[in-house]
Length: 244
Image (cartoon, rainbow, N blue to C red):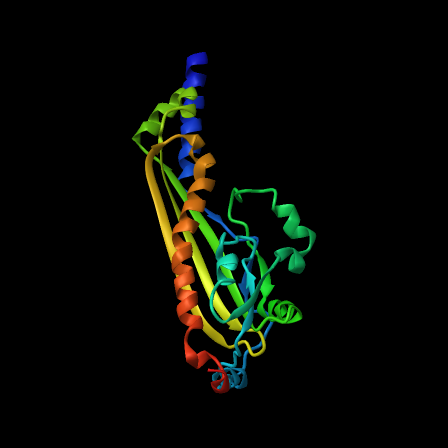
């Protein structure tokens, strides 16, 4: 009877492992930039957007918002770009209050967690309070996937799950950039980038090393983000003609 119970427990454990670890985990920012879902958009709003024109005047002040998943080094690097007089970062705590600070204790969201919606209009208002000309959203998100490989069949022995590399894992990091005029909402440009990582035959402890991999992804993406930002801000047509 004990043997049968042990086998049944092993099979049940393996079934649970299979069910749980073939799914993906989406690690979201604390908050994300979205249009107010309550806002009604009319044809007049669309026509007004068409009529909006670039209106930057050098030197410009930039407000950077990351949604709680900052790209390390991005804001600091912008301070050295020609034509920029000041760069400051908007903390999600200013928009969310205590809820943001409570979430900072979690490195990873164990399951998908719907991020707080940050209304673009409100974010532009905060940027305006800081006298910024340009609002730059630069936020990262991560998707971690793992699934069992053939070695996972040894997990019926239970203790082997602690050291047998019965998993295959991959991690993808996505970064989005949006350049938005604080005064008019004019969209100057967008950019998306991605880095991926994949490794076969890892143990259940592999997730503990993923913070370092995320940092490596960001370090690879950062130069490309800055290159795009420099090219965009060097375009004469985004500035008023009398300031070119």
